[in-house]
Image (cartoon, each protein chain N blue to C red):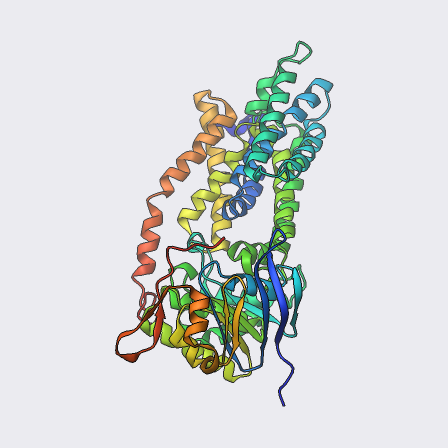
Length: 280
Length: 250
């Protein structure tokens, strides 16, 4: 159990995973409640060309990812406005274009080796900068989610009445998407372009099955992401499997374990007095 | 001598993408009044409510809203597993008064508890919203409007799917809210209910009639409102409209 901790790289990997798990688990709850999972997946893939360019230029991946996510967001907004094309079509067009561009660049003769790392992540080798970025992400996430909590909750609950309560659904959506985009940019280096979404959606979906209040849901999601994430690292250490993929597998396992609990929660609620039509 | 109306519409036309879904709407909602919004599905009832909320701009005419409006929508099926309690939902009404960075605190939760007691749900404050019955959910949303201190309540077919006991209970609550001087505008399909209230507004793509139920709800108005879908109830119980489930909103 303690053996992996004697390795410097494992200690760093665990620190990175804990930080990303805390942020990803918490943000993921809102991603799931707002049905933004597809947007999260899309943002992650849209970053790919930025990562490739940064890697070719030998600059930190963050420098490439940030503008790529901006370009993708603006492009999605613009394509979505083309008459006759829905928002989903807009997202699909932009994402496949961006990802294709990334692949094109990655397979060019100038591309350095190690493109695999961009796709599948390098959770076992976080740099100091990666760790600092992840810590900053956790701090920003805690502050932002605390400030936005009540508005996120009320808007997600009843979008149609939000305006009557003085809320702006568009602003709340934009704030959540901006936070999500920032988190993906930070997390993608560790977890990889293809698997990063697992850390945002999987733990939250698990927590959804285990709780029927938002506070506990966020706590459970963050805990699930941390435990499954670290568990995945151990799996990777002992079984010699790829880091990011092992983490994704561990998160999936947590989700599957949570599935049978949901009906139990519902049954417990239905058996309480006064809840069904008796009072009307 | 009447007080200033809570809501006043004059020649109002509203719709989507520049083409009116309903036009020629003129009515006033006075304090203490229950206004029934009658019309077939797709006839423009919800559109009128959305214009009052300011979500849709008038294409013609005006709508003046002189009071805070609270909404009581139908709960979407997809939101029934949303992780909030009845108390959480009622407390959301306080957001209209709080600065954007503040969340409902002890004071607001107390106001929410009082409002839930007002609608007869204090026992169920801690229950998950989606696990309540349809009538209970409607009353939680009324409590949210009370926490908001809304002087106008806009209710979109609140009786749909309720059994008789739940309907009667909700109707009594609406009467009590009106007795406090609030205005309540209710989209409904129940003509008998509308006859018991203070005024009606009949719409079918345009305003058919508006005024006191006894004067307005005659055969001609009903036929113009619902097309041919009216049936005579046996035993002199008046008219009813056919169930509208083969229609759909635009």
